[in-house]
Amino acid sequence: MIFVAIDTPDLDRAVHLARAVGPVTGALKVGLELWAAHGPRGVEAVRAACPGTALFLDLKLHDIPNTVAGAVRALAPLAPRYLTLHASGGAAMVRAAAQVAPAGTTLLAVTVLTSLDATSLESVGQGADSEAQALRLARLAQRAGAGGAVCSAREARSLRTALGPDATLMVPGIRPAGANAGDQARTATPREALDAGATHLVVGRPITGAPDPADAANAILASIPSEQ
Ligand code: C5P
Image (cartoon, rainbow, N blue to C red; front, side, top):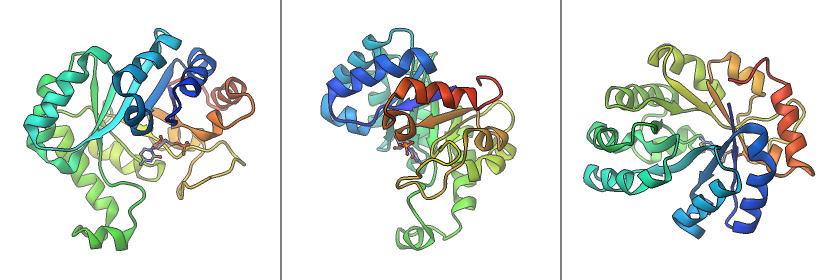
């Protein structure tokens, strides 16, 4: 399944994109940009533009357990299919979120942000080995009730081994062969990511920045063996 990242603070544009690509992929991701500008109403407007679409709410929650649990409860009416939280918030935080998450919502752990290189990791007091850190955090989150993780295609293989066959692996940084990488440093084609163990893909600008987003989404779907 491909989640199209609706990354814009402009609600009209978000609704327009949702109408165009929602029926093609059946799955949309809303993140902090739209959330910061329009909150739950923005999410509802996107959903109303394309009813029945699976919603991935990428809010990367990170706070004390009580606050995160309260946020997860407050998000329940939006019925996200997937919701992200930072595994580095600790096992108690993930567990508190998992205890109150609605039945239809799978929590996905964000481990090490792909924007952090070895130097940045050391500067925030973490070891320079980002892969070991990502594995440690993903395992911790899974034990605490997360259903999977967000990871780069490069990490997908080792996370699949660590988390087992049932874990959801949501992989952003996807670029169709020959596409512009933009600011993504480590990209993979849809097929490479799925071969590495991804269950779901996140695609933003290659679809939303295309002259015809629905066409671009269709082309990406056609490039993978069968919808996953
Ligand atoms: O436009 P593009 O395909 O690069 O968008 C990727 C989406 O995935 C964005 O919404 C970005 O915030 C998100 N994401 C990412 N890398 C992560 C986690 C999330 O690119 N590690």
